[in-house]
Length: 250
Length: 380
Image: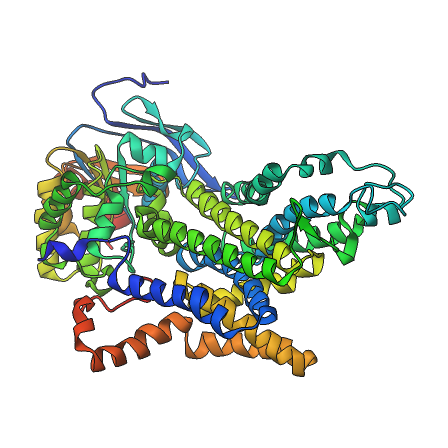
């Protein structure tokens, strides 16, 4: 058992296993994320990438192993407690509140008034307003604050969801395929956005687009059949014969 | 970008107009044109509006479909009926019974003493508290058990329907304690004030109307608070809300309990105005009818819920007076028609058809027009 208070890592995943009716989607997986690191997880379909994020944010319960975030055992916490501890998660398909305005989408994500009575008596003060405008500018949606989210393009929805996470100011941000379905221009803008926001936090990204990965990754972890196949810099994994064999070569 | 557009005021211009018209209809129009009998009947219809308003928040806004609101309507109604029955069952009034001083149906069922849980209902403050508290506690137990286990959608709806069936069977089965299938009847006075006279019924109509507006404003407050937007968010993207740091179950429990409290008040006012409470009023069919009131009104609209309850109940009375056996088919047809033709119910008709007409002939009223991108939503 590793020391949970090890200050060198933000996130420590150890011996993590989850089994769905005997099928081990994640099998004895261990990896460590440092502060301010941008870790990209790649791997073929079914490698267990999304399941790893699900396990960290509490959506799926682990069969065995441990996940420690800044010394806290995430496996014992409820989803909303994990969020309050500082872990933010973006889903693969853009999940925004389509019936609400961009402003309301961001406001609901603002880390205040999260209890029943907090929500009933939430007051929109100047600090909230400013923060929302600040984030909106970052995610290129300043002019669309009063627009309903349903009217945004696919790429804009992705940005909005990233903005909804940013406003929570998480220490660990997890993004599941943030550029999937985006145009080339949108990809460039997103890479620029991500480069700006990963500066002062740790980020885990799942992505298939290799040029995008090369653009943002500090380190890359290659998953295969629920296990780490290779880990290191982009060049390192690209030249790893095992990786070429199962993934890049195809 | 105009900051003014981002406000969510408690009452928009449209809300003010809507509530003003509704107040005029309920406080002025109905008392002016209806005779005492019909006014009492409309008062009865309005007790269902309490339930429909609660359903608007639970189902329309929050996406929690309950087919068991009759439970809470009934519990509120029974709490009130128990108090009134005890007051009506004085030893003098019940002198011919083998055990004088207990409600008549208990005597018929060979009970010789008042059950202990009836005792507190001698107190009016207790009974009034129970009208709200009993439905809320019951709703809390059901919703806590369901929502913390992530039971939702159609499964939740079916379970609420099962619970309402169980409750109705239980009430019918426990005749000696509940009055069985006949319910609790022959209610006479409230603290000595005869509730059967015409004047009393008119007074109760206005009490009911004032309470309804109180409930409407509580609902409006919830709707316009961050809670209201959060409920919409939960309805559409529950996981996103959960992973934004909200304990989704606690919000669902809250709104379900609030709906139950509204229904309980409605039930109590029903008992007072109609003079009895029975299990036939709280079974599966009445519970589904309550959802239809809400759907016909426009399930997102608080004001619409009141009109929905009025319209469907009025239609029910009118049709079932002439074709009693056809009413259920009529109700089904109405529900289908609303879903197919007017998915936003009466509120949708108002927003999409009538308001543009008003604006055409009275351009001054067009200030409220929302930016073209944000298509007006009947909910707002």
